[in-house]
Length: 269
Ligand SMILES: [Mg+2]
Image (cartoon, rainbow, N blue to C red):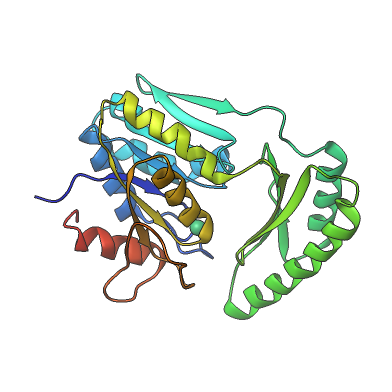
């Protein structure tokens, strides 16, 4: 019998390959199977609700036995500023107000995206403004990442020069996020802890699957709130010393393949 963890997953690079963006159906099935057992589970991402509703959510919804099992799903989008949950199988969307970048900033970033053939501006974001690489071959991606670095300098110097409440963050390799300085993915930890408590899981042992430092910080935030935490790490970079257990795939796999390998190691698949 395997340990009963409460699972939390990052999206990009954990449920997907980072440059492909398509969710892995094996992991979506696993998430649905946890929901069928009335085990709370979270997806915590910088992506928009509409992005997740396109591919990921339909995979999960089609995998559950009954819609009421979806009540155990907690989806935090746009770095904890938009939350999707279900009540009696009906989706609810909760947006944190007052954090969206000003319209002129949004418009300038959109212009930069439109002027660049290898980046795109994600128009569906509510509280974050993003420029993102479009993906493709290794060579194309390398060029796109170069363009992103040039844009980073332009945005810092020109667009945000007088916007003290807003910062631009380089999301490792895939995007630039222009966001309010209070926006922080780890804020989702508090909502998820409450969610799990409301599902009558009294001493949860969390396992957080991540591939970047923001996921590590999310796990830390759970830990700092007095929870049992394990980090399942499927990213490339080395990690700092951490006060909790870290699991990696035995065979050196990364991203969605690493996630599946760890689920197998733990006896869940
Ligand atoms: Mg990621």
